[in-house]
Amino acid sequence: MKTKRRSRNISIAVVCVILGLALSWQFQSIRNNAKVMTLENQKKDDLVVKILNEQKNNENLRAKLNELQTQLSKFENARGNSDENLKLLSDEIQKLKTVAGLTKVKGRGVIVTFSKDDALSVEDDDLLFVLNELRATDAQALSINDQRIIDTSEVRGAGGYINVNGRHVLPPYVIKAIVDPDDAVNALNMVGGVFEQIKVFVDVSVQKSDNIEIPPIGEELIKTDKLKVVENTK
Image (cartoon, rainbow, N blue to C red):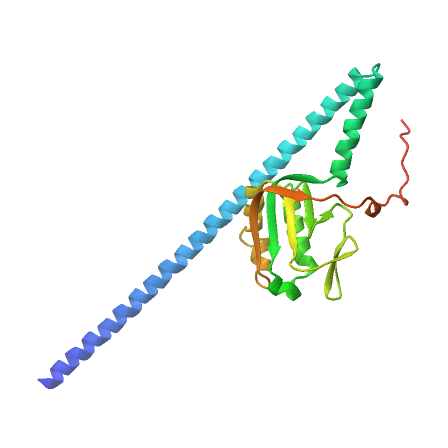
């Protein structure tokens, strides 16, 4: 009798172990499926963000074309009026100075901060990675530690420092951008994107701001002595 009871108990224990393993496998399978679905949804969301950014870039290009056509019409209409011509030229010079980075600007945007505790781990490529992503999100003005970034700006490592526009900048490294805040945050936090890759080595964060101020670049940093104007031969 005792032998039969012991055998029955062993059988029940074996069945319980098998059921436990089956439930564990099932639970793990559900978790894995959930992770796959989450990743797929994130990839879809990222794709939507990219498409929206491309649509916005196209809209900006169309707006720029319309603006240039409007300016052309104004110059043509003001041909015989020297005062009007002077004002149009003055406005155009001011706009070109703003585009070139020669004026202080402000607007809505984001502030990206690299932790001071990880300063020795921050490389120039990390900063360039963020700058390029912000440019792709249609940033209109950028700076690193209040050094204005333009097309000819250099950002490179030099010993234990990082040089921006030929000057040492010290940690914490702070990138400011005048850009659509929502677009920038979404782009930086994209799955497989900038932050996901940088955060493996460095603590970096982003915050939105309604009042970003970016200083002008020094005029001495804009060099044109090697450039020659190509005359229009038409």
